[in-house]
Image 1 (cartoon, rainbow, N blue to C red):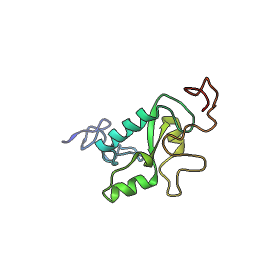
Image 2 (image 1 turned 90 degrees about the horizontal axis):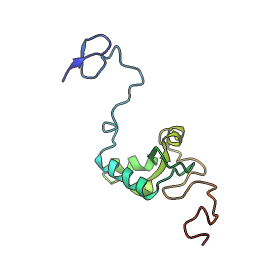
Image 3 (image 1 turned 90 degrees about the vertical axis):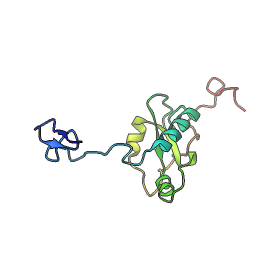
Image 4 (image 1 turned 120 degrees about the vertical axis):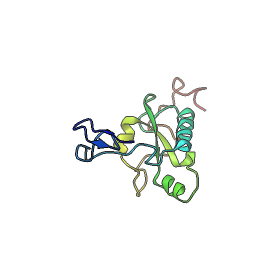
Length: 129
């Protein structure tokens, strides 16, 4: 369905015509491959680990995927919890796009906990085991 460009009024498929569309236009999450299966996986990962893997933050959580996640999807396999990690939006932005070299030094998979997390009785349910 065509709609008028919000800058010049010319008809376009998007809010802006190609002339007024920013160069860094990003397609929707669905068009980038984040389908309903991804949404369910993301929700489950954030429920199982309600903190950022890198900094321990508990709000504005997102789910980052390993480079292998999209390789699995391309082969028709589902993305697994082992292929993702929970990060706050800030850490996810700093991490950037999935890198072929891996997730980087000192960055673990889902559930590894933030680095340097204290093992004091007040920080660990049930105390030190």
